Length: 121
Image (cartoon, rainbow, N blue to C red; front, top):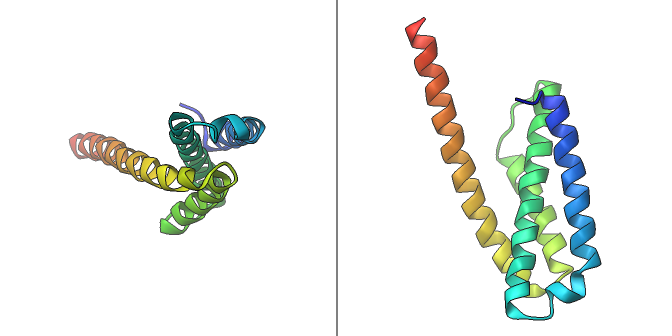
């Protein structure tokens, strides 16, 4: 498992790469309906990588991560989606909600495993 510092660096680099590719292929992503949906999905990946970056940054600083990080990451992703196409904003939001639900579910499962191990010892 990566340390918070390494994870923060990797997620920031991934954010930059995805954003650069999305802006390079902005015209292609806005050309058809299917590519517009793909543009929203890539923007939701921006949300995921930025949320990981902010969460790890706050963890290294000793602060607690809350809904503020989610809102900031979502706003940045929606702005990036808006540079591609208006429909990308909607699909980005929907994909981001789905990703956030799955992350929350995985986090809860991991936390319950840690708590059950702590109760045994």
